[in-house]
Length: 440
Image (spheres, rainbow, N blue to C red):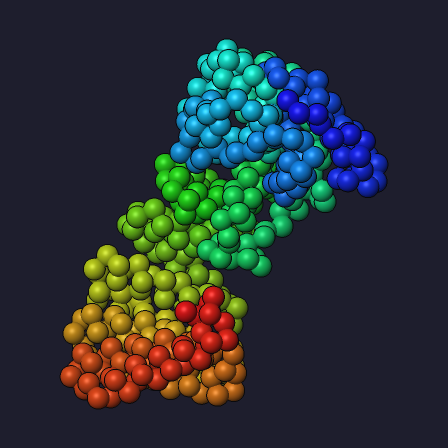
């Protein structure tokens, strides 16, 4: 192996100050220096952002250093790294081991069992240092469920998390960043963070963390379903359902609204997993909860009830239960119309959304004139909103005009349909010129 750059200079480049990071990095560099052309196994614990920065900088300083991430489908880390590096070479930095750890049942992770059984083959496959970079919770999984492999680990490095722990105060990142807008990298980091939270909370969390653990499980299931890890996502959905049932049975004061919020997210996860009947059941529960809340405090809870009825209409429509879908969607529109009469600035956009949905459901039932009236009213509302705030409402106007074109076309009024659809295209073309990433 080629000579490694001076470790003191490397430490200085990475960490200008002093502290735990510098000493751990120095130990890692010494391992690479001493092992050279012989197998040596290390585990480095670091958050993803710091991990990537460290590996990238090490690659500029350590000749021949190689790095690879285990693919999500890998069940044998040794074979996956063999495929990545078929020829002998410099030290290996491996990431992605956490993808082999089941979020709730690490003991059932096939990848860990294979890892545990393969330790004797590593020295022949890799006559060089190998370092696995993992989140902290993976260490516990290795100790418990791959003990033979863990005993083979000769070097352990810990780069502390920066900032506060997210577990005690249960701050939720999804409040500012919707789940479906994350990049692949951000999603992977969120999966790691949520898995750590769930495992730290434990199967019997303290009272203050019960509802938060359910939120974390549901969001984790969502992200796993998006990345194709469907079996794990289904396990999480079942766990969330059972945990919510236990909370409902306990009937704790002040928890009804938070349970409703969890059921909303659970319904979305179940829909994502193709479990449409289960998603409908969760949404019906939300409607029941919010209807009771709205009866005692309509000013606070009628908007939430309308939103839930809108979702219920969508669920019923997806199951072909169109008359029931119509009833739910019409009730949502009626509630929002009353709310918009007293506070148009707050509720006119919601009314337009409900009217658009109402038009779709009516059209599906063959009630085309009624569908046209609802959709035209939605387009008129969106046009008024876009005149006062084009940045916020031009996209909604384009969508409503597109729907309006469909309704007119269904009635054979093709010239009018062309006019509405052409206007939608023109609006979206202008939007795409200024923000192609969002509107192309």
